[in-house]
Image (cartoon, rainbow, N blue to C red; front, side, top):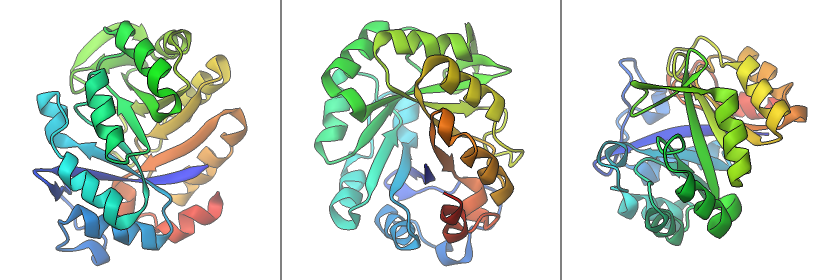
Length: 239
C-alpha cells in the first residue's frame, strides 16, 4: 500500500491553496520540480498531481511542467485534471506519466471509459467523487442519482480496474477518510481502490492500512502532509 502525496499545479507553479502555513521545508517553494524532488527525497514512490487549470478548462494545461517533473525527478506520477478524451490520455502518458485519472465524466461517457481501459489498461484510473454517499460531478457541485457503489459496479462492467474514491465532504477537512464506503466498494466490486480525502493523522493511516487485504492499495494525502500533521517518513513506516 502506498502513501501518495498530493500536489496541485496552477499556471505552471506548485499551488498550495490552504489558508495555513505549509511544512517549513516547503515555505517559499513554488517550482513543481523542486517540490516533487523534495517528496522523492522523503521516500515517496508516487505523486498525485492535479492540473487545476485543466480541471477548469477541460483540457490538460500544465503538461510542460509535468514533463519537467518526469524528466528531472524520476518519480512515478498519477495525474488528474482536464483529461477528458482519448487524445488527452495519450498526450499525458506520452510525456512519461505513469497513470492518468479520469474525472467528472464517468456518469455520462461510458464509451470513453470503455475505450480508454481497452487501449491504455492499467495506466487509467477513474475518479469517483461522492457527496452524502452519492456521486457528484462538475467540481462536486452537481449531484447525480448514482450511489458510489453503483457507480463503482458500473465502472467495473466497463473494464475499469482501479478507482480513486474521494469523499468530497471530507476533502481538506482533516476529519478522517470514509473507510466504510471505500471498504464496501473494494469488497463488492473487486476493484483496486485508492482512497482520498480527510486523512488527518497517523491514526487514520493505521485504519486505512487494515483495509489492504480487501483491495485498498493506496491513500492520497494532501493537507495533513503540508501542514505537518503527518510526517511522511513516519507515515510510510506504517505500510
